[in-house]
Length: 597
Image (tube, rainbow, N blue to C red):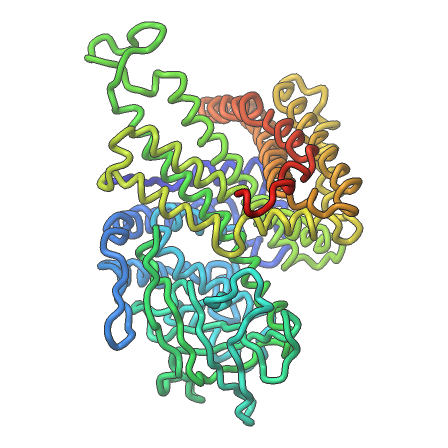
């Protein structure tokens, strides 16, 4: 049975030493988030994940979801009880507004909790995760009466939410969408169409499911400018808040998938279902993008989560599995062989994963804090800077963390040899589950094009220049710190590569857009490496300070610094390779005629 232990200590190091959460006590909800309270909250959340979620991960994968002839869907054994434990503990509303029944704590804590629950059981974690995204969209765009009707029940967890975008003939290109909405004359609309790949579209864990559905109102313009967003509940809600008759929405089938078997990924049929407009007519994508951006960040968290749980199991196996002798002589002469963790290539593999995990966790915490500032600060300039960061880093977090999260799950599986290919070890599930994160909420190639094609030039390049200036200022301020010598110089080199790649696009992509398309993924990963390198430099600085305090954390800080040095020496140099690929341009990529492939 695979194991999982939530990395509470590592998160507390980030929130206390690297990005001190107490600096933000001026923001609503932060004053209550003292270090002691945060540690108590996360420790309790870790216990739930380790004891209620993780034990169901393997069995949920094996059992999967079942659709019955009446269209209802059963989730794997134990899922409902674990979900009830999650909602009963108030985790759904951890960072939701108090006026809707939430606790109002920083959304940063919810981001951390998302990692824990996703590592423990990704398929189960998706049910509340999607609901939180739906709540976010409703809070920003729904009229007051809709919020009052739906949000408290969703925060409570007795109702869940979904996002309905994709149709059989259109995925990324939503301008091709065919689902239609016909006005009923009473302020409601009749929704008809089919949506596919709808996560948590039908299940047996709650009494109602609130679908957010993109559709085109009759007579609306073609393309994306004619799309509207509607709330379409599984059961209609009466004036007193109780449930009424079944709406015209049903699950036509469950998709047979590579992974996340415990999540009901449904084909949803809308047959004159009653819906209510959310936001302005024909501006549904604006409203849905609130949920999509929330979801993209959450999917980045999923990439880290599968890398982390796969790593933990690979380390446990590497310490236990006896195979061969160390190249420098037997390390355990009393045993028939040494554990494989003595071998350099095993250590290289494990350190590559560990260095990513800790850097990615820091990147997510940093970005989550920016999200809190963007949504809670009263300072307009501070909000703008934080919002710039979110817009720029969202495609990087989604694309890079899920690409590397999957790669790391494969690396961790490799540590098991043939046992990793056997289902009972659980390692193949981490690989299969991690794979979807590279695809949904915008495939990673689309994330790369969003970064290069939209985010770099947005507002005259204000966001990317802000990032360059911040990283550059850190390097300058710490250039003479001997304890950071192995961190600042590689970070400066990586930043220079990123700036050179950005300038190359400015000079070569306007006249020839294929240059941007051919280099976009390399650029996204180059950006990601520099962002992770910046996180490691900041963690190294904090670790040195913590180590000097002599509070008994020296061993942990030494391990942190050793991991950081590995990142800088073995992973950071990839920026040069990515830059070389980008500056070759698109000629070799686009030269071959389609029939020659």
